[in-house]
Amino acid sequence: MNFSNKLITWYLQNKRDLPWRKTKNPYFIWLSEIMLQQTRVAQGLSYYLKFTTTFPTIFDLAKADESTVLKMWQGLGYYSRARNLHFTAKYIANELNGEFPATFSEIIKLKGIGDYTAAAIASFAFNEAKAVVDGNVYRVLSRYFGIDTAINSTKGIKEFKTLAATLIDPKTPANYNQAIMEFGAIQCKPKKPLCMFCPLADSCVALQKNLVIHLPVKEKKIKVRKRFFNFLVIKTNDDKTILSERKGKGIWQGLYQFPLIESKKTLNKENLIATEEFKTLLTTETTLSLFNQKEIVHKLSHQHLYTQFWIVETKTHKEAKVSWRAIEDFPVPVLIANFLKQFQLKKYLIFLVLLI
Image 1 (cartoon, rainbow, N blue to C red):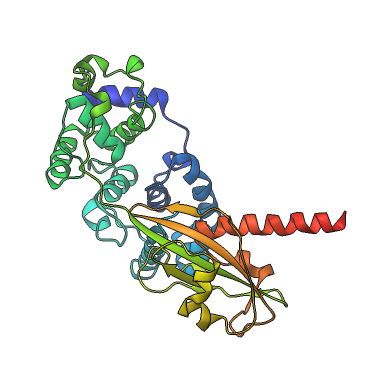
Image 2 (cartoon, rainbow, N blue to C red):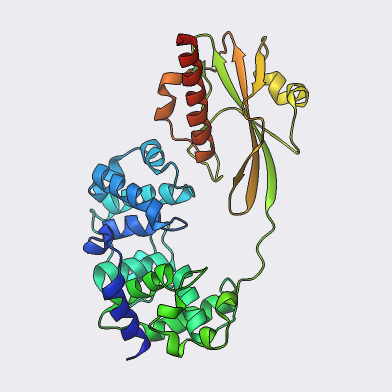
């Protein structure tokens, strides 16, 4: 039995029961693939179910406003995925009359869709023999064939795509693509792969040469940038605050945040008050306190955000127009969402103490 047949046989016996595997609807398949980029299945499943319930057709997603889409995406991160998803839904609904493109060459032209996603949609929805190459596939192929070319190098990307194209079963491309990705996810895992029970063990080069933990190879990562954030959480006497939408092309575009002062290092209270941004924003008497005594380190792919939340109590502020009761309606970065949960919990605990 060859490589492809062994994988498909294993898949049919071991595959996880996932909703997007029970449909040929390209809209649902597209949703699942976009959500599962940079996201574990366990986390993405609930978002998929929420999206398909709220937006059962591509027309429903297209009609939604971006703020609603971002709010529903909150917690998944990499928000450009959600913005591109919404943009493409509107394009398909309005320009293509809701008809999803049916070939790899047309699908890949859509905004937010790259080689891997286009291949996945083309094979799963339309049975086109286009091989998928994601992190799981890189790992399986690298180990099985003993390839030590860096998977994030130009040479490596080309080499693995070429190899993958020769292995796909043209008769059952959907099953083959699902099989090799599933195999990488639950059998040939990054750490502690199940080599002892592997159907490919007798012909796996990495296993025979004791290279499993060394493959696949990646070139050195880009240096991580440190940034220092100070969020000013305004609280007025009439229970209002300031939330503003982030503009530009940053990672949090379209999300809302408290006034932000970015610094070159960690600031104490005196340092913060001395900044021009603080003086400009708060011209009246205020009470300032640090909510988190230890910096929150929020790790993104190429930057780490060292974050402090400062509670600023003031009688009034002309820019404070958002009621604290409505704050949960706004899409915010997960960093701020986590703060809000802790802040509201603290307020509730204080309220209980006062009742006693």
